[in-house]
Amino acid sequence: MTQTIHLRIKHLLEETNDAFTSSGAVNIDYAGFAAMAISDFKHLLDKPDLTDMELRRMIRKASHQHRSTQPESCWATFIAHYVTHNANQNYGISGSSSHVDA
Image (cartoon, rainbow, N blue to C red; front, side, top):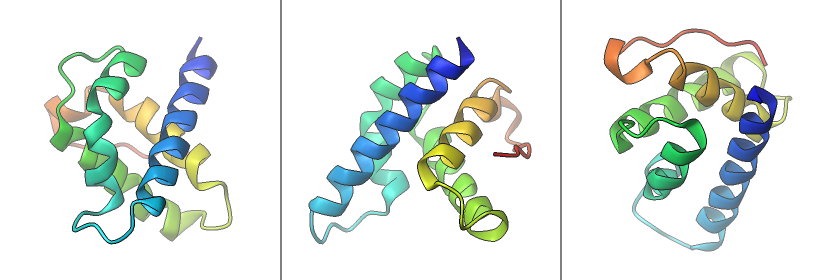
């Protein structure tokens, strides 16, 4: 089941990234853009209390970690693993992030 959630999150990340890159010059980063789909992330993660700020923070930290540790790996797969893992660790409540290996 976790694999299914991961694949759905990966697909949502790819869709929002495609929309972000085709939207032209917007005054927002990808994390902010993806957070506009907060209801989809809440549903897929089964986290109705997830806030857009928590989602943006997770995506930004995951992107930074991806660039720092595994830039050659698939971006969407890495971010999906990170978001799925951290959302299930009550990320927003504790305010901490945990490392995930993708």
